[in-house]
Every structure is written in C-alpha cells, then in structure tokens.
Image 1 (cartoon, helix red, strand yellow):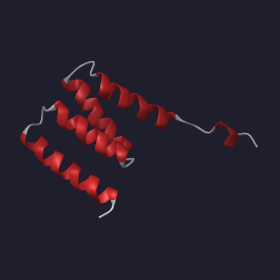
Image 2 (cartoon, rainbow, N blue to C red):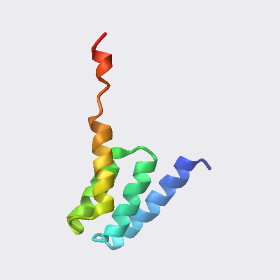
Image 3 (cartoon, rainbow, N blue to C red):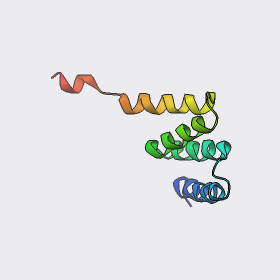
Length: 82
C-alpha cells in the first residue's frame, strides 16, 4: 500500500468520525492536515476554515490556511517575461 492510499484511508476514518461529531475542530484539523499531505489544497483549506469557524483564532489552522493561500497565490512571473 502506498502512502497516498494509506492517507486516503485515514481521511475516510476521520470523515466517518466527523459524521458522528460534526462540530469537532480537532477532527477537521486532522483531516485538513491529511488533505494537505496529499496536495489536495482545496479540501484542506475548507477544513482549516471550518476549524477557525468553530474555534476563532485557532493558530495552527490559521497557519496552514495561510500557507495554502500562499501556494495558491504563487505566480511564476518570469514565465510571462521572455
């Protein structure tokens, strides 16, 4: 089993737990980190945003969200200047 499949299995377990306790910020944080590890930044950002909705000012979730936004905002400007 490769790493991605293992992480996707963990995501399924955390998602199942979230169905039982949908206001659990720790579970959203954990799932967000798992999505981040496999490069699924959109889903990770959604989970980190959910954490900060439940726990305003959550520093770890805010830090991850900031990193993702930097990744998504990055533009390689030299490609436009031949």
